[in-house]
Image (cartoon, rainbow, N blue to C red; front, side):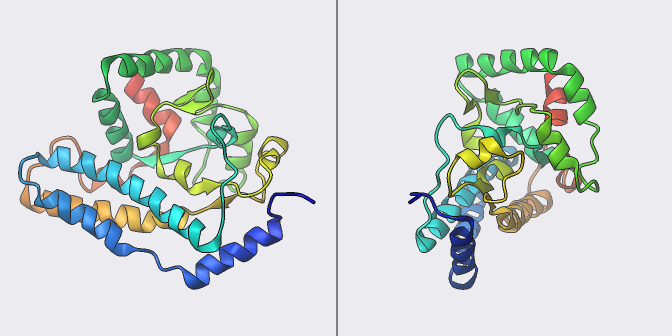
Length: 244
């Protein structure tokens, strides 16, 4: 008998989450309130802090949902099949990832910067071609992108580890496998995997609340609000611009 959950069992547990779990909105509100109360840091520093803390809050929320339904992820260190999906972020998130990298210790920062240079040299043709894919309206875009086997710009191919793990985008946090990990290697888009992408509403709602307050009461220099929240593109395109 398999030690892994079946697809049907996973669906039942997801239904249990839907009917019994209530998202902890106070978790997100508290982060915003605490950051806004800190008068010793700039508006841009507050935005960077909120970005990192709210991403962490999403991960904590997922962990509590899993506890509620007795779900245990089977994703393991070194398993990186999901790191070949197209990742979409807005301009603000891309800028904040760049900012987080700039604040990393010099050796880590230089490693990432050198990696990005090599990445865009190695995958130039694929990045150019897949970067033009119509991910917003083409229902097959995700499948065709994944089939091309283009790794994320921040995937260390020697270790299969994320180089910006603590500030990895929300789609990377909300995609989880609870059954045999082999389904990810055997299928371009396995049906058994689960996405908690609905948490984007709480995450972005909290960020927008903070930005709106800062826009009205303090001076934001690095983010164009609200424009940067509504400009979306593939991560490979944002990071290419940063790399240039």
